[in-house]
Structures are given as structure tokens and as C-alpha cells.
Amino acid sequence: MESILRHLVTFLKEKKASVKYFMVFNVSRLIRLLKRPNIPKNIDGKVLVHIGCGQFNDRRYINVDTRPFKHVHYVESIENFGNIFPQGHLDLIYASHVIEHVSYLKLPGLMKVFYGCLKKGGILRVSVPDFKKIIRIYAETGSIENVLPPLMGGQGIKENFHYAAFDRIYLDKLFLSAGFKEVREWGPEDSEDHKFNDWSRMNLPVAGKEWPVSLNLEAVK
Image 1 (tube, one colour):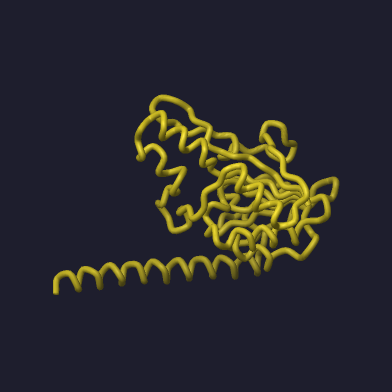
Image 2 (tube, rainbow, N blue to C red):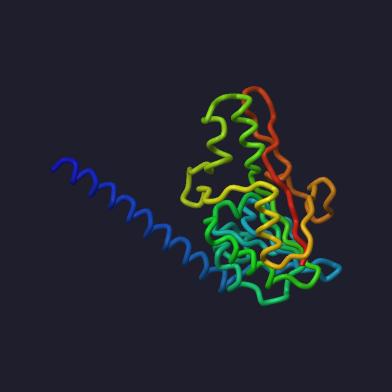
């Protein structure tokens, strides 16, 4: 009986959290429909989108995030990206440490959505945890605890769980299978469109050493 009550309490707590998240998420979406920050546009007319922008607010980008920061133009999940933008509309889609939060089963379809929303010659630019680099950290430190956050996510909030893993070969395959014609490395320090200090250029401090953990690739339509 005690075990049943304990499970019932846990269920009710999870249900309450789910309802609260549902309400906050949908109310935030409604607020953005009624009062949205001005949609930016670069001087050269390019349309840039930052998915999972978090607290970063580069005013050249249209910001998309599930969290209702004031600078977020669309409070929306990455999986609903195709419902926000029309076909052939965007010049650049940027996502840093975001697509690993999508089930690997859904990634092929999501890549096709991104491809469809880009103009010809448009770029899908991503930064993801690099599985090979994570394995290297484990091999040198011998501690599984050192690689749990980049491998599995911080898991402090509902949105911070990882459902996919990447290396160069696998990410290339995802891009090319979606129709992209070229895949190449990119560096945040060399990109005029990248002026914020996010995970694409940050290292993970482990055992007194700074470890690069990101794989930075972009695909050209």
C-alpha cells in the first residue's frame, strides 16, 4: 500500500508539472502572437534564424525558443519549425547544441523541413556535441561521470535531455540525405554572422583541462 501511494504522489507531481509547462508554453505563444518583437532584417536583405537562442540576442536574427524570453520572436519547439516559416524563405538557419534534443528517429524528417525552408544557396549551420571528442574525454579520464552532461544533457529541465548522438560521418549523411549539396566545417571565429559566445566555441572543463566538445558543420542547399 505504501508503495502504491508513493507512485501515486510521484504521478501527481509529474502531472502537475506537465500541466504547468503546457500552460506557460501556450500562454507564451499567445502573447507572442499578440505582441511580437520586430522581425529583424539584415542590411543586405538576408533572413537569419537562430533556433534555441536562449539568452543570446543577436539583433540580426529571428529568434526561436521554447522559453519566452523578451527577445524571442517565436515561442515554439524546433519540431514545429515548418509551421513558422514558408518554403524557400530563409538564408541561414543556426542551431547550437539544439538538434541533439530531438529523437534520432525524427532527425531525417527535420532535416528535410530545414532544407525546404531555405532559399537556394541557403545554409543550415549547426553545432552539436561530438561523440568522438566525448569518447576521448572518457578514454583519458576513465570516468563516466565526466561525459554524462555532454552525452546525455544537463537534465535539469525537461528540454535538456539528449536523444541523439553525432559524429562527422553521421551528420554528413543526415544533411546529404535531406538534399543538401555540400557539407563543410565552419568556425565561429571566422563567421561574420556569429558574434555570440555559445557552445560552438566553448570548452568543457574536466580534470583540470579544457576539452573542445563541439562538432561545427554547415550544409548548403
